[in-house]
Length: 192
Image 1 (tube, helix red, strand yellow):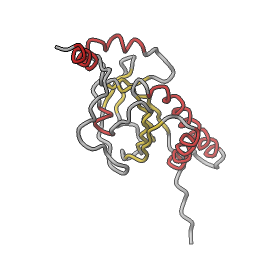
Image 2: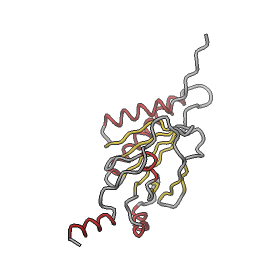
Image 3: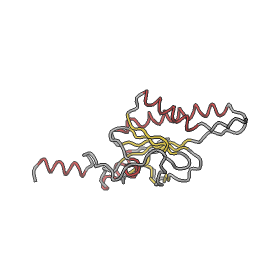
Image 4: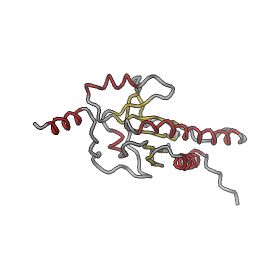
């Protein structure tokens, strides 16, 4: 075996080469997202279904894309804060849509032998990280490598928003605007 081939095989085994795209086309906006279950670094389970009328923001990235996850998460929480402040000013019971933000690490290139070691690199935190060892997110949504991937799922389980990229100010602003519109309660119809 040539040295070049041996290095390529070893790199592939360690998940260092680019992964082949997931089979099948990713779902599109308006489609129902299939249910899935992932575990975080503390071995707690997150299942997509069962969150009532919440809006779910999934922020996913591979190792290179992970540096952008926190900025996108802050933008989601800022949008939620703006809507919450407006909602608290309303008379009566608050009616905004609850928000759930989950970070997901795309770990499908990590060999099984390394799972325990890699899990240990994710320290307990205020915002746990779901560990996607099997490429669940790539199969459902398709993922862009080396950037953050965002998916917003409405309470009825439909995909409402998709974005992928670095945390550039104009992208964060556009995401915040879109998320605020999704979080705001519907305006009552005017009576004739």
